[in-house]
Length: 245
Image (cartoon, rainbow, N blue to C red; front, side):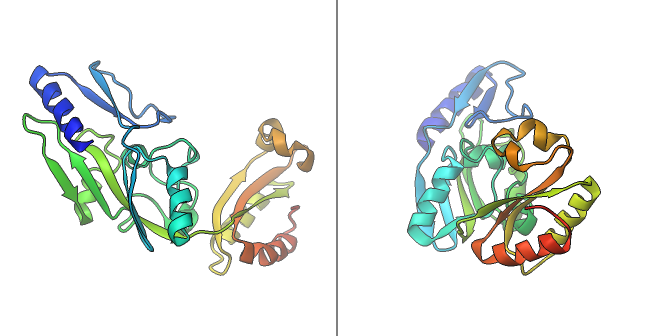
């Protein structure tokens, strides 16, 4: 609970113990390493979804992002605007503290864009820890700050309409052609997509083992997440630009 976090932080301040807040532990770039020793503050038991409205969700920092989407889809047919590649295990607080964008950013931009985070509740580490509700530009003081100036305990995030996204792999013999196609897709306002990711050869044939039978040797690919309504027009665009689905 928030009260327990305050108690821990007050004791840490009193004894001069460095605190490293930790979410699900998916930090692929070493964002939450306890370089000064001290104690790890595990936030993963604070995992409740607190409130769901048609256009937003409020949750505790330890809520897993995939769980958030399951609950918002069931309640209001919405989903988070974007998420990191570690979506199935990443916590919302950790994403805000150390992330920047991800799947969905092709349409919605990055975490530090105004409107991408609606509100944060943080607790300070001082003699008498304070509970602060941040809105507007104050959010940017804590987003991507790794918990160094306050422990995120709650977040309010905007929702967008949820879709049964269709995964597509589009192959090109030349990587530059793949990049041209990816840029064209990203600029198509009428094509509803959530992910556009060009991958140069030999990455697809070397690492995409589940889809190896569909990928030609030496072929670069573009990975797409496409709304069902956009699959047919996307197929036309692929044909016009010489790709293989």
